[in-house]
Image (cartoon, rainbow, N blue to C red; front, side, top):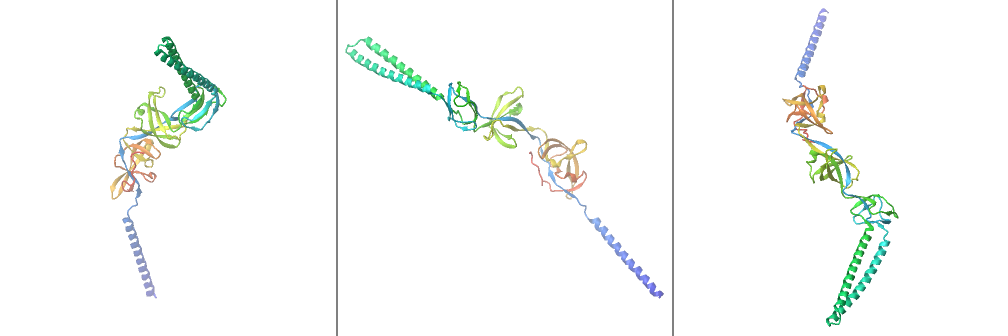
Length: 376
């Protein structure tokens, strides 16, 4: 019995020893495996800094869209308006009849002048025949020189009277023409000032016209900037939220004493109504060396400063992040122009700065995977 108990104890001891050895061996293998695993590195998207000597600052100058031509149109003669053929808002073409004055008196005057002209023509014809007979008789010494001279004088008087009547008829024609109101250019009726049947004075406005087919933006521009513009230059014009292209027509020669600006006239598409507020957009070169970066590449630093995270290569595809201070000179919708502790070719983290910290080792994406344009 004692021998059996001794063998049992020895067997259990041996089994426990074997199990312990196995456990120790397994733990040793796990420790070795943990020591040989590489540390995990976050991937950082980077872009390469492109330096430039200046940047373009876009400035806007407010102005008003006006018609190329506008006119307060009226009759040149006084009289009663018999009819107006157009109304407000209508488009008209050059030479179109817009209204008429009562011309009954002018027509009666013309009839009278025509009658006088016919009378003079008849009398002149008779006098010329008498003169021819006297001249033929004078050749045979059958008529006196005095008779011939009297008839010749009468012919001249009658011819002058005919010329006077013809001039009066021409003046009558002109007054008849001026009793008809015609459009001076292609335009739109902006306003009608009178109604049919009214008696108007000469020159009293009947219609207000604005030219169609050509509208202009007139904006005041500072002197130095206005001097950079020339007729024919293409510029950007903003009306509301819409951006269009305009053509510089002329730069004013006179400086506004109040604003110290010069008026710049820019032609704009005809679908813009006169009276709209528009903005002339011009680029101003700012002589500051720096680089454009996306706004996601800049974060707030200590004491109100701004920093970027530069990825400094350390080999084996790794880099360490450094905080570099920068100064923001200009901001657009999604880009910033900065200068400071960055130089040409530096790699900076372009996005996700909240996931990184200075001194952190990261795995940057290949250089040039995200390169920013020189200017917005």
